Structures are given as C-alpha cells and as structure tokens.
Image (cartoon, rainbow, N blue to C red; front, side, top):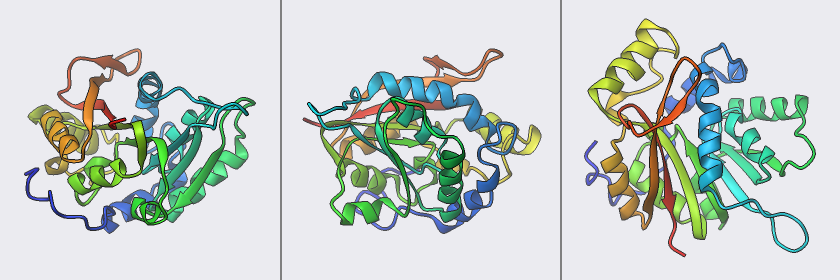
Length: 251
C-alpha cells in the first residue's frame, strides 16, 4: 500500500465485493467452529485490550452514558461484549444480512443486567457522518484492511469522535510471515477462513497505520501484537501478523 496515493480521496469506504463475501457468512457468524472461528478465538483478547484503552463507561443520572460505535460489526461478536462492559453501543455494518444475524442473536441471548444499551444499524460510516453523529469512542476491529481507502476511512472516523476520545483498530501487518500464516496458511492449508477473506496487499504495517493516523489528526497512543497459542490468544510485543492499536483524538 502506498499511503500517499489516497491522501486526498474521500470516496465511499465500502467495497461491494467485501460486503457480499461477509454477507454470505452471516448465518454462521456466531458458530465458534464455523468460518468466523478465528474471530471467536481472538475476541476475548481484543475486548480486554480495548477495555483497558477505552474511556471508562459512564451511566446514571449524574453523567451521560459513553457512546461507542462498533463499525464493521458483522453479526455483533464484539458489539455484545462491549455492551456487557457498560457502553452504549451502536453496531454498524454495510451488510444487511450481518445486521439481521446480529439482531437475531441479541434477541435470542439478552444481555445481563448492568449491560449498556445495544442497537444495530445497516449502513455506512458516511451515513452517520452526514447525520452529524458523534461518539465518545469507536472500535474498528479487523475492518481497515477491507475498506476502499484506509486514509479516508481514518479521517472519516476521526471526524465522528468527540475531542479526547479513542479509536481502537485491530488489523493485520503486511509481512512475509502474515502472507504465510494469515493468508496462505489460514485460507488454503488449514481452512480456518474461506478462501478470499483477505487480500494480503491491503494489509497495513504499523508504520503505515501511524502515518495514516497522523494524517487524520490522530496519535497512536499504544500498540500491541496479538498471538495465538495453545491456551488461547495473548498480547505480545510481536507485531508481525496481528496487532491492535489505540488512536487518541486530541482533546
């Protein structure tokens, strides 16, 4: 990816082929042994890391609730977890089928007492921006590598976060190791993901993410690798394949 090629482009972030691919998987999204099992496996780590870097959820009469946008939410795997933490969550996805699956799962599995509000919407971030929507935080987990223009996408998100807010991004590094494991190994050899789930050339290095964040007026405040292991996924200093980052919005 040449990060400077798209600096001035603000076209739609949605890629129709990507949406169609994930829509076809919507009815199996919540199957932990199905095509989304890598997301199920890493979800606990993603949520725990996000919890430590997001603003604390506020609730009650003395303070407004903390509004969080989970963009590219799919069928709500992370959205439900974020709502359980107490955030007022809006899960947004361009796939109608994924949002239908998210709503069906939420209806069949009500959140426990103490959880925050949870709502879903089919549409794009551009729709929300046009309406003037603002949030205290945004999560974009395994999303940026699927959008049309990562630079414009981060600018779009930055414009929807309140001053002092946070954007949590998790994605894949573009390295030979990620090509071997996350693309060839996961899709063609181990069949952990459907073939075509990822395009390796669209993976984003941490340095590129830092450049794109800076161009959007954001600052990388923390970053960590995510590594699979025999006892589950763990946080690591190794950013060679999967990583997660906190992008700070100026106050």
